[in-house]
Image 1: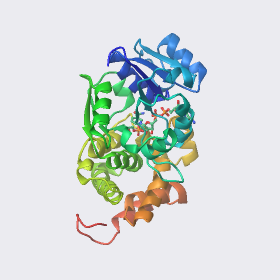
Image 2: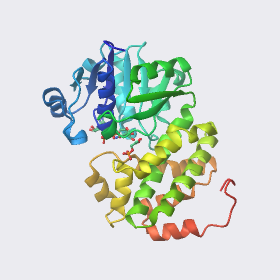
Image 3: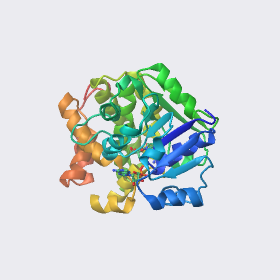
Image 4: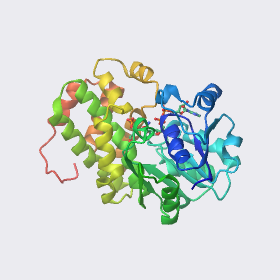
Amino acid sequence: MANRSAAVLVAGSWGTALAAVLARNGCRVRLWTRNLAQAEEINVKRTNSRFLGDVTLPQGLLATASMEEALTGAEAVVFVAPSAAMREVARAAAPYLSSSALCLHATKGFETGTLKRMTTVLAEELGRPESELAVLSGPSHAEEVVRKLPTTVVVASRSLTVAQQAQDWFMNTNFRVYTNDDVTGVEVAGAIKNIIALGAGLSDGLGFGDNAKAALITRGLAEISRLGEAMGAGPLTFAGLAGVGDLIVTCTSKHSRNWRAGSLLATGLALGEVLERMGMVVEGVRTTQAANQLAQDYGVPMPITEQLYRVLFEGKSPQQAVEALMGRDRTHERREA
Ligand SMILES: NC(=O)C1=CN([C@@H]2O[C@H](COP(=O)(O)OP(=O)(O)OC[C@H]3O[C@@H](n4cnc5c(N)ncnc54)[C@H](O)[C@@H]3O)[C@@H](O)[C@H]2O)C=CC1
Ligand SMILES: O=C(CO)COP(=O)(O)O
């Protein structure tokens, strides 16, 4: 992919880290941000300090606040806006996008209100079939990727050709990319693991111990798989990088925004204060609302999600939520509920 042109929208932690991967692969990368001062910092100081500290960004990566400049000549376009901004960013990008450009996203969440997956939102705004789009997901904190620490991810597309093209753009010896055709499974897993990570942070913050966290991860995976399969995903995806892989990293890593937000909630701070202190997107909060609704729509039991919803939005205490989970009726491990 050396000497080819790519655009990454937007310049948060993950967009910047993915832009760095592409630039290190020899691509000319335009990183779009709505913030002119941030673009100047990236171009002059080679840092994006608010999101990635003092890490020096590679040459070949240029930031711009002009969508037209970012997209002109781009042969691959990577959408990495927070889920709440995906439609707006895709709509702004659409007029400048070449019809032959490879389009993928790396966002983890659903659209608030419509509960749509991100490839559906992109397909609608870009006027392309979902089969021409791809999603990149898996256990991959930006803070480690930008430092070239070994990372594995998956790119999923209904078209193997599209998935392989995305694999070609990103793959290198620090960043290993697998292909997959289960877009729904990869998107559902990437979104819902953030809910479980919020719960894990809360559990750790309250000193509930390692047994509780292992239970959250394992029973969280059961919940993710149940919803995913009801939405049409293949069961094996949840045993892969986008499923159990991302669940482990987000529930255990000090880099996780969702885990950190959960641990701050455990100190008794209100949700609004926690989000203000984080200063970065904590997708699990909106996703808890979305998944709680999806669980009802699809008739799928999601007890951890439901209890977290009550803690976040109905003022239930975490202790009461744990009591509710532990006091549920006895059941078989592989039974639906
Ligand atoms: N940070 C990470 O390590 C990873 C993040 N992700 C996912 O990537 C997505 C983005 O997350 P981060 O980069 O971490 O977020 P971030 O909080 O680091 O950055 C978000 C960026 O989006 C910009 N933004 C927000 N609303 C916007 C709008 N309407 N128009 C234009 N720009 C807007 C903000 O100014 C900020 O620069 C999320 O869905 C997250 O779950 C996925 C894998 C790893
Ligand atoms: O998805 C991620 C890692 O794979 C990032 O998770 P956080 O948003 O919790 O940091």
